[in-house]
Amino acid sequence: KNEVEQSPQNLTAQEGEFITINCSYSVGISALHWLQQHPGGGIVSLFMLSSGKKKHGRLIATINIQEKHSSLHITASHPRDSAVYICVTPTGNQFYFGTGTSLTVIP
Amino acid sequence: ETGVTQSPTHLIKTRGQQVTLRCSSQSGHNTVSWYQQALGQGPQFIFQYYREEENGRGNFPPRFSGLQFPNYSSELNVNALELDDSALYLCASSYTGLAGFDEQFFGPGTRLTVL
Image (cartoon, rainbow over all chains, first blue to last red; front, top):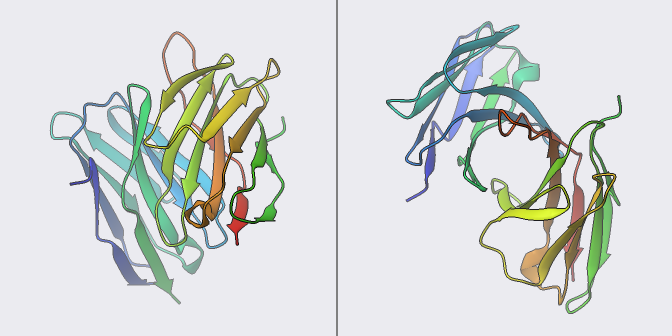
């Protein structure tokens, strides 16, 4: 069993739809990262959060430390949002990666 | 402020050879982490260096080793290459201070192919 589970694994949405990607983890953490990886490999850090909610443009990330769950929301999705979204938990001196969610937004 | 850079971008080696990958951290960062991402898989944590010392390691054999230099740039060395070492190798730099670990910034990666 992975320490970090993401759902769904694959997601196809129409442009403009509201999207939610979930991340559940079993390890004790102090913070969680959401990363975006585009085809070709480039990784961009979207958020690092340890409590509550963060918003950046059309992206919103929430975390509930007690429930060990985080969500990434994309409002008014756009084809350029098509990418793999990965949650990462640094725990002690280790990093645990979620399995990734592959998002395709269709025009 | 320059971002995280990695070199080379692509590399082809044969089984049994040794390889060195390089990473320049973002200015002001003192921590670098290395990851291996096989095709179609998520990244796997190799190790992290903080102030020139290994500060955590994933489930990788000793033939994966690293260095961090006083300017906080870093190298990943892999000895006795195996076919399964073919992957995208990513480094990420961050600042670790009294508040603990901070957000990571990723380099573009080095794609290693082992034939």
